Length: 284
Image (tube, rainbow, N blue to C red):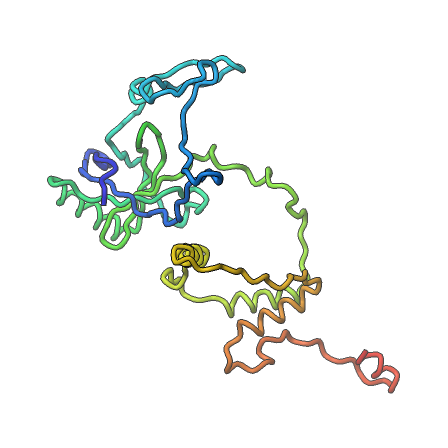
């Protein structure tokens, strides 16, 4: 793996020299824009609208538009100098992992000990493992300051960058959320039964990217010169009866050896048979 950052974890007066590696990788299939007329890949060119010419990287600075058409300019060195601890992952607090909502997490990195940091690395790893705590830290990567969660994954210290609180949008901004929501009790019972039937231990290896597999297969077919025909899917109909949809889902999710009655909600007791007319009305 490629080292993306070198520095140290600090907590109190303890420094743990580490190297950082990206823990995840993008498996999306990269495609280029092609000019249909001649088949040439299109390139991205940085152009100046005023000078009407291409601009090289060394001629580019960064600017903040404080008024329409007016900018204050910054050089990369100026922004780098603002980093509080450019080569330090400073742990501020230790907290419980379940206290952090998943909405805060951004990207995961693995941290490995530097050549001289093995003992300190092992000490921090074991101390965090036995206390069950994770560290909340500040870090600067490529001139970007971020909060981070330091935690243990198997026998490795990992760092997950997390959003600052003011970067999380308020739920009040989400449109059309129901006010004073109410649900039908029978539908709720069946929905809970469906959740129970679909509940299983998390096994990430059982999930795969079906779309990517289909694109790769289509790529091979096109390379081989095969004619590709995509059969149209049957039109989807909106299910109006929510109870019917829940019942159908329960039947589909139910193991083969479970009796049908196990998935059905408890039926209300029948009314007393006062007369034949009453019985007929009850059945209808």
